[in-house]
Image 1 (cartoon, rainbow, N blue to C red):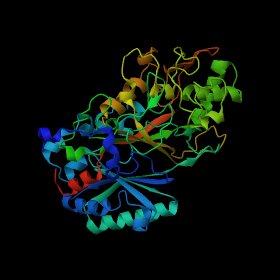
Image 2: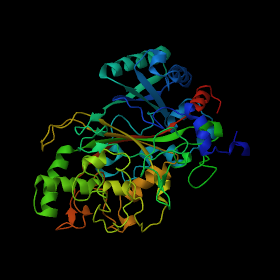
Image 3: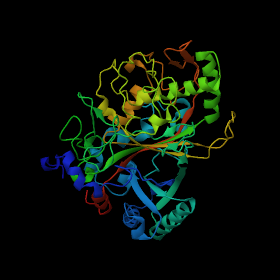
Image 4: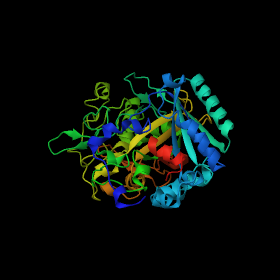
Length: 472
């Protein structure tokens, strides 16, 4: 199957004819508040494929078609593809990062110390995790109904065991501008890279900045396999054959515990260090400097001195910025979380095409909010489930984690300066905040801890059929 005839790709214009073959929640998010991520092991390949045949009918099925209130996606680890009988040539054609998996690549992305795999939950990243099914529904009752159906179908076929379950629930944000909030108090999500040829809205600032000042969507091959990308009309050539990868993608799952109490306490400490006062406005300024946006979602680059919810509420304005004229980071620090994750037009000391390192992010919260004003942790597990969608794990997720989040040299900062939100803190950590009375923050705590993760292959529907029927 790995003949030259398979080494083709589709143009962006072809995508509209293939959207029905792409799993929901990839090109556009599923806007249902309650979720459940179910990690399973296949104990018998033939029986597991029988279970997948039943599950296949629910992937992309609309609620009215099945009389249920949930939607399902399915994705596989490398070990899972092996367990259901994918051929050796196809298995070996997958990129190394996917084959090794997140646990094996932990040091590459800086998952060390308290973030290291030996601290992860539920066997995540290990050889007994073969697939993840994730459910989306509109209520807690709907989630339990979905789980009842899920378990019944699993028990009917056998060959599949549940190894870990993670529930999520999107937190409604208090400012009511239509986005979701997260445990640290920031509206999220605000921006996602648009895909050329996809039938989804695209707003200024979300895509690629053109010389004339306009913004365009990215080529589909940056996120979907089988299509032209930003550098190559042939796109990614793995896995083989073409029919296996077409309309598929790679998904990086990350469970991140958020220490909300530590974040709140540090804002007061940092406000005194930077501005000589822990007044509310100074604490909010520190939070914005660390994130790159105000709580409402308004970017510092557009409103550096105070929050402007009107900008945050306007999709035509809230991402329409480039950091032009702010090479020193006076408006938005070079090391802020937002600027690191997408430097836009920031001059880079290590030349790279920013458009080649974009990620589609499907983030959703887990756990209840910490009581308002509480400065001590209550012992409850809470945080963020991040799911990153891309065509190349090494070039996209791993590059962003290693080069942009875990270091500062790419924008001329101290090499030890990491992302202030999800970098590794502790003694020696620091952040430069130009324009402040005392422009350095030191010894930032670990606000986030990695609790587990997986590298997953999300096949297109025809590819999923082929996997079930062992055509590859």
